[in-house]
Image (cartoon, rainbow, N blue to C red; front, side, top):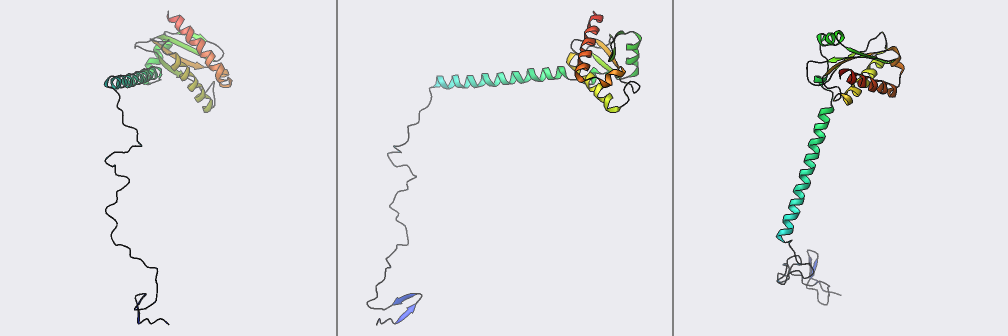
Length: 199
């Protein structure tokens, strides 16, 4: 039988013949070892040496980047200018009754089964559009709105060809039942007649 005088803190003391597997573990880590992530005096032999491009190649690369940036900026400016020239803004509308009266007073007339288009030379630069889509020929509001959108869109696409003209568009009863394709074909023909009449 083992003669163990005391058992304190989970350890046997003064127990002759008792063998344990405990070994001495130092409290402080070995300070003489080296860290693998710190470069040694001979460097990292597995890494390829850094190579820097010659000054001439760097200059050419920077110049190529500058040229590409300039090209993108120029293209964006042209797109913005084209979008601005094609928009239908306030300056492209007949805004008051006096402007409508001037067109009705001295107008060239173009008429088919869908629209009647009046045009006269305006007092301002650029083309201007006035709409007279009446309830008499188009009773439903949704139909009138569709006709107005079609006329504005067609005019927007052709307003550069109508430069200097004030135009008033009135609808016929058949326009309310016509397809969008028929509306645009009719308007294209009217714009051509307006250009021809203006000389």
